[in-house]
Structures are given as C-alpha cells and as structure tokens.
Amino acid sequence: MLAATCAAAPSANAAPETTATFSNPVLAGDYPDPSIIRVGKDYWATATTSEWGPQFPILHSRDLVNWKIVGAVFPKRPAWAVANFWAPEISESGGHYFVYYVGRKRDGPLSVAVATADKPEGPYTDHGPLVSQEAGSIDPMMAPDEKGQRHLIWKEDGNSRKLPTVIWAQPLSDDGTQVAGERKELIRNDSPWEGAVVEGPFVLRRGEWFYLFYSGSGCCGRGCAYALGVARSHGLPGPWEKNPANPILAGNQHWKCPGHGSIVTDERGRYFLLYHAYDAGTFVYTGREMLLDEVKFGDDGWPAINGGKGPSSSAPSPLGMTQRKAEYSFFDDFTGERLGPGWQWPQANEPSIRLDAANGGQLVLAPASDHAGDPTGAVVARSITAGDYEATTVIDTRGLKLGAFAGLSAFGDPANALGVSVGEGKALLWRRENNQHKTIAEMNDVIWPSVYLRLTARGGNRFQFAISSDGRDWKTVGETADGGYLPPWDRSVRVALTVGGAVGAEGRFNSFRITPAPVGGMTKDE
Image (cartoon, rainbow, N blue to C red):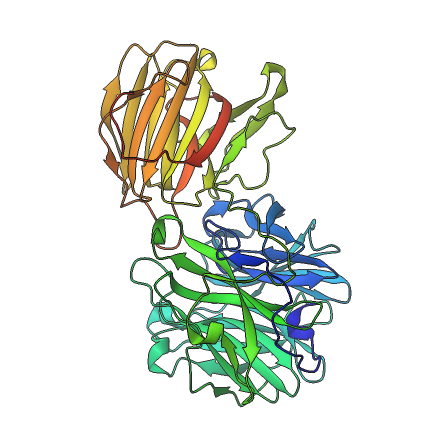
C-alpha cells in the first residue's frame, strides 16, 4: 500500500532489534527523485532519467537497502514527449498501479502525464498528459483527501519565469488518468530557505494530520542548495502550516543538497524516506544518489529525520538484512538475448542495438539513420557509482568498415564527451565540448583483430585512456584529460560505448567491464 493512502494510527519509533546496519547510498549512481511503494513484502521504486532512455527504471527490493534494476516503465520513449523525463511517482489504487511523471510536449511546455499497469513491474500503458500549464507542470504525485477522493498534486514551474512557485491539488477522475474538478493551491515559496522553489511534493496521512513533505531552493549542479521541509494540515485542501523548524533535512559533511523523495511504511508501521543527495566527495560526477532514512514523529506531531543532522552515513538496517557491498564492479559479455537493465542511451537518439550469440556474445551497435556520420552517432552507457574506477572493453575490429570508429567514452551528454575510438588502423583520443568535436591525440598502426580499450578515472573528472592488443600490455593514448566540463546541470558522467564516423557504421563489442581503479596515480605506458 502506498504510504500516502495509509491512515493507520501512529506506531512506536523504536529501532529494530538487529545488529545489521546499512550505509547510504542504498543505490549508488544517478537515481534522482526516487519514488517508492510497498506491495506485501516487496518494495518497488523508480527515479528520474531526464535525457537518458529507457525512461524511468523499475527498481525492486525486499529489504529497503538492497536494490536491483529489473526493467523500465517505458522501454520506448512516449510518443507525445521529446525531453525532460523527470520525477516519476509510483502509486497504487484498487489493485492497479500508476506512474505519474513529467515530459516536455513537442513544441510545448513541461507536462504531467500518467501510465498505468496491473503489476508494479509493468508493462505500463501510457495515457499521455493530464496537466500542461503555460509555465510548465512538474513533480506530480497522487494522494487521497479526507473523504478518499484521489487528487493529483504537482508543482507549477513558476520559477522558470521568475514567478512564484505554487504546489497545486486537483481531483482525479475515477480511473486516475484525468483531472476533474476545482484546482486548489496548497503552498507556495514564501520562506527565505526555499528561495525561488517549492517542489517535489509528497503527502502522507498519519492519524489526524496530513503532512506535505516538499523540497526548496536549487536542486542541481555545483550551485545547489536543496533541502527538505514539511507542512501539515487537518485536510488536504488546507490551510497548511509550515514547520517552524524547516528545513528538517539539509546537507552535511557527507551529503550535499538532499531532497525530493517519497515515504513508505514497513510492515511494522514505521516510516522511511527514500530520497536523493550528492556525495560530497564525488558530487556532480556521480550524480544524485539514492538514500534512505527513517522518519520519526515527535510529541509535538512534527517529523524529524536523523535528529536534524542531515542524511545518515549509516543506520540500523530496517528489516535486519545485511546490505550487500556496493556494486562498484560491473561486467557484461553480451551473451544474453537482449541488453540487460541498467544500460541507457541518449533519449533523443536511440541507436540500433542487437546481441549476436553466434560469435560467442557480441554487442552490435550502430547509429540510427539520422545520426549517420556523427563520430558518436550511437551511444550506450552505464551510470558510474564512484569517482575512481577503470572501464575496459574489447572491440572486434574485423567488421569495422572504412571511416567507421568504435570506442569507449566518459560521456556527459551528446554535446559533451571525451573518449578514445579505433578504426582505419588507428586510435583517436577525442574531445567534444559544446558540440565541438576535435581529435587531441592519435596513435597509428592499430591493425589488430581485437582491440582492448581502457578508461581510468580519478576523482570523477580526470581521465586517462589506453589501448592494448591483448589486455596485458597497454599503451596510453595522449595525456591525462580534464573532464570537469562533462556533467550536465542535472545528470552525472556515464561510461559509454560509442560507434560512428561513417554512414552504415557498425561496431562489435565482445565485453564491457567497470571495476574500482587500481591504487596509485595514473601512469604512462605499463
């Protein structure tokens, strides 16, 4: 049951009787604006994907601290939208599942839309936009009022036009796919800490109170100042009283700019907030990662999180389960029937992807026809989970046609990337910044049937590339490169496989691996 629909009486806030602990993040990497529900003993979540496809990962856990990607809400981009796939909020009503989400209409504003399914894992059917205000409509969620009438709650994006920001509520149709009835304002930004923004609403009913959790100030990038506040009311329409102690969750020495989450109850009736924050060490390079903290209510009826000390570094494991070691390693030999969950591509440029089992497992990657000739016309990528890592791939060069190049990249977005590619008997170290693509180093006589490429990252923003014919003897290509320009405002760096350069280009990759970087500094040829 979705926490927002739970009107159970308050329960004790005692910690579970267990010695097991978990550490934040519960899911490392770029998973902003997470949303969660519980279905029996299972927890299901999703998160923002922004300009990456497929849209909105489906995440599963049995214990709140160990999460696995099992699919996506939209394997293919919704036909009505062209960008800005933000803030999916998963909910349940009458045995049906809803994901309210944000997209941008073609030649139109940011809009709130909805998809439905009979199971939390999908498949989901899209119903298109519900609300499309001129200033933009974002950050939706569903909550019932005191009479059980479901409402859509969302933010009008007034800050995009230097106007006040308003959080609205409006009744939903019986099937939850349309708004119906009068729209009412709940709150707006009127406190100094909120700055130009109140957003990311989540409504929880507890006893006689409705609680509206929301985020304020700047969410993203190096200048972020995000924090989480709360207001309460005896009825969904209000009036709403903001907590004098706001914000109740702000950054600390370990985590920066926390906010935009949702709350779930466990089987004991305790409340847990799933939300995002930046790791203070790797910051924008690893993106907004998924954190968990218990929400406890005081005698005054106001909630608190980690005693007001900001995101916790570690805490008792909610269900007594041991947290698996953070998965900083990943390997894919492409022997499955399809590319596994967690792989992504630029949402406006879905490449041609197929797996070839006949050659012992290969990823066959090619640009879509309208991106033929682009040096990075085809991209598939993985989110990074640490600032220091090593990524390697093996390319079968025998199928590369004249003018085609296949490579390995530190990838911010299609306009900003850094990588090494092989083709035409050479290796090229290249840099793309503000959509200006240039070669910065070149190595000739690369005529091997298999080429190993390696990317070594330090601090999330310093990159060294190397090449080998056997995976043992490596030669660096060019100098250590600065990738500080790579992360977009709202996303992290990813490691990508790339193909392009010629019409009809096709690259064959035998494997892909990410591991923690070796101890020590970057070196020249090994």
